[in-house]
Length: 509
Image 1 (tube, rainbow, N blue to C red):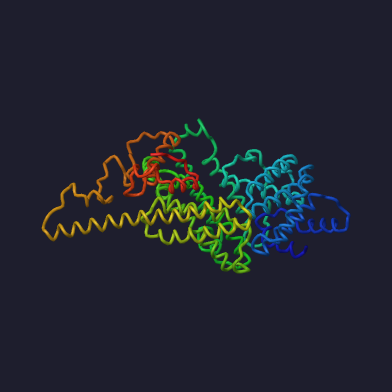
Image 2: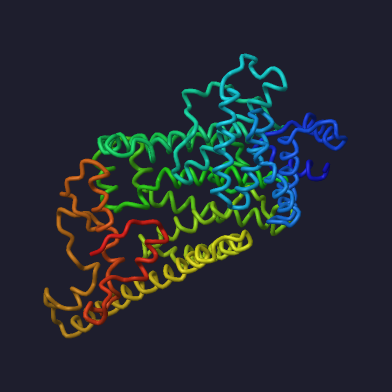
């Protein structure tokens, strides 16, 4: 037990200080001696052992599974009586499930923990100012709950069970020596709250009536706030940069860095999901002359850069962690899958980038890593198969687009060379000219992406259907030199499958 507790305190506790070592060890001793019958404490003990066993193994372990199943048997006893101990047990169970990529189950246990925390007013200031150990522990437990809830809400878009205006418990003091990662996660969770309000709140009529200018300005200010948050870190562990620290601290710094990049991707998600021309046009219209314009202008690149940073940080952790080849279980497959999908979308949107070969290699390599992790976790084989299909179809699509453009360019160069040698001029309607997409004249009413700038788009909701037509008209089209009369299909089914996997609404041409 002491070995498992040491591992937990070293790897998990700095991020989620849910237990106090002295009081926890005393309680475990009383359980062992038969002097106590606290089911919540017993469940916490099993879950701590499960978390530590998986951390030691660097993956799902048999010991970890046995301890987790033992804790789950006590679930009914945990939720039967609201107490600080029951909230602790549910939070530990949430982390254990989340570390095994069981998001639905962990979301349920977290929701139960929040309700029990509200029942004992854990979110309220008790007036002690965290001056006594009990108040300090209660503060750590509540803010761990807050961090987990905001993280999972941002990832899933599910409704929150916490309202900030009802939370006035002060944050705890320094949890560990050195840099306060827990305090940094609290501040990041508060920034995530703003991102959630920007992305998810006000659905329906309220959101439709919100001006695009307000959305863009809030997006820009929040982007600046995230950069300022990262600047509070020491340079050796600063999110957004390469991490240079000891192997014991590397898992903590990597986990926080991945949380930062997840938030940055979520914030700049509109660039991934909408027509680039529309977004740039609106930014130029509403943000001209402001310091936020340039960052928003490159939102698509920022999302791709964050995805690459997630891959880089994960690879560094695999290479330089205390046990090479094993990473902390706090870094889940879902985080890596997010980066795989984001970089895949970026590659599809910018198919002629010179970085596409390296980006595709990253998508393929880490896509395989995600598939293996889900397979070990016993996930649905069809879901795992879908990730592989996404990778293969993405590579085929990019190869087809690049090959077609190279062929068209070569044909144009050949025709131009022949015309020059014969001292003749190509006709304006030459097939060589019209076959080259780069030689087409863009009308004055469109931008470099071919987006119609005269379109009246007063709000995002009314323009949503237009986004898909603009962005995916060519993606949905049949392959070159294929006509609808050759078969029943009138769209590229492979690309429709890609859109389904990405969660993108289908728009038929």
